Amino acid sequence: MSFPRSELHARSTIDCRPFRLCALALLLVVTLLDVSYAAEQRTSPPPTAAAEVSPLAPVTLDGQVLFKVRGVSAFPAEQRAGLIEERLRELASNTSLPLDSLRVEEGTDRSLVKFSDELVVIVFEADAEIEGVSRQLLAEVYRNRIRAGVEAYRRDRNPPILYTHALYAVGATAAFSLSVYLVVLTFRRVDRLLGKRFKAKVEGLHLKTFRIVESERIWTGIRASNRLLRTLLILFLLFVYSQFVLGLFPWTKALSTRLLWLTLDPLQTMGLAVIEAVPNLIFLLILAIVIRYTLKLQEMYFTGIQHGTISLSGFDPDWAMPTFRILRLVTIVFALVIAYPYVPGSHSEAFKGVSILLGVIFSLGSSSSVANTIAGYSLIYRRAFKVGDRVKIDQLVGDVTAIRLQVTHLRSIKNEEITIPNSTILNSSVTNFSSLARERGLILHTTVGIGYDTSWRQVEAMLIEAARRTDGLLQSPPPFVLLLSLGDFAVNYQLNVYSNQPQESSRLYAALHRNILDLFNEYGVQIMSPAYVGDPATPKIVQKDQWFAPPAKPAAPTPSPDP
Image (cartoon, rainbow, N blue to C red; front, side, top):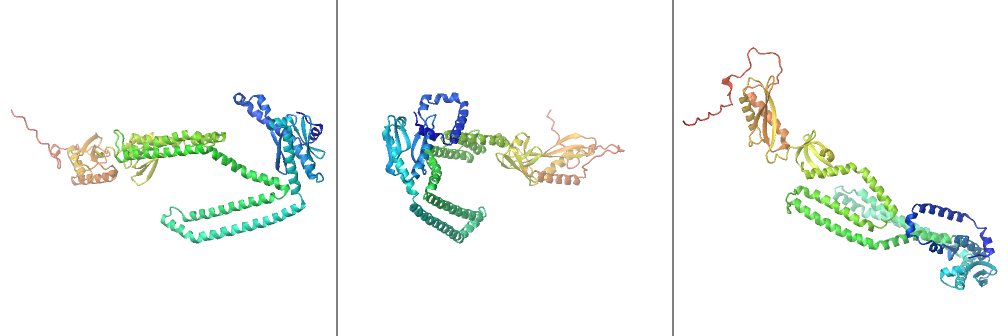
């Protein structure tokens, strides 16, 4: 394709900044694509096919697109369109040139669209071949569109039309100001009306909900919604006013068109995206319904196990809800894996980047939480304890009040709330005072030191009697006494008693100690806190006639067998 000397000469005076920007953008694209050349070469079209498709550049006059032209490497489409636009503006401004002087001159290989004797645009055979029409027809189309554009250009700049449009602008400004005033006034009255009629109802809701929902917050939300609606309405009026006024004058008509497209393009893009995503959204809706009812069936099944209506051998009812939570999590994760490819925008690089970022943040911030959660489930399935048990974890003793996924709550014997992370419990020794106490009883024990001058039989009898006098202790199995050691100054006796009330251990110990003190005082036996001073004059021994001092009784003689 070749161009006449006049067109090439005019091209040399055009600003070369667009060309530099295009070259810079091309260099950047080539640099980025060079990294993935091996992957792209499989899907990219052949070089000959890519060369056949040349870029288009619009030719505009007063913001109105008349037609589009193509270019070649030596004369890009943007420069060709800019040259044609410059000629059109000059010729359209020259009102001495009548519209009837716009004509088409045919050449051997080109058609010239001229305004009188001034060249406007050249139509080549290559242009017609790409459009799929004859060169003569394409030149006539260009001429008709240029004629309509020049006619509108001159009409919009006609002084009477400008005066009329100026009056329209003044009227539109007055109407816009009045509309904004009426909107503000109306919403102000609506705000007062809401304050009179609905504030009392909101306060009544505040009383009915027992301060769960603060009335002031509800009222603030209502007023904020009212103000938001007012602001949106004013912005809409401003947009309509700007569109109308800017479109009245030829110098701002292009800005009006651009403002309109800046508003409509995002809406069009979002609308097309929604329409395109409708099949995927329907799939996601059906998947959500299926998963929802699947979870409901799971909940019904495990609730039945928890309440005993459904029984599984070897499956503790206390495991029902934790197992349901695990199964629910697995089901939801499985549903997310299925749904992910159907989420609109999931294949975009931005979506993948945000997903990776959120995954990294979750991994870094939830390591301890995940460890505690796993430990919580481990404790549940190990059945180390349950709510209501009296336990000892390391040096902490208390009743279990709640077992959660992250922590376990204890209430100490001093009515203190103790919170222990489940991972700590998993790595600690746990003593459960309640698990065996329900069936066999918990053994409570206490130790006393008695001198060598008191019969061990008498001491055992007194300790057993003290256990029998203590309310709350089990008499079956019976209490028993162990001689722990023969110390330097005293014999250490240990009284062992059974109880099925681990939570009452402190009270039972206190009552047992009181009864021991009373009994030893009744029988004149001293409970020693020995300290060595010196040897006594006579040995401190128990005479044989004192071996069965009351309340001890000698054992019944064993009958001898008949000869």
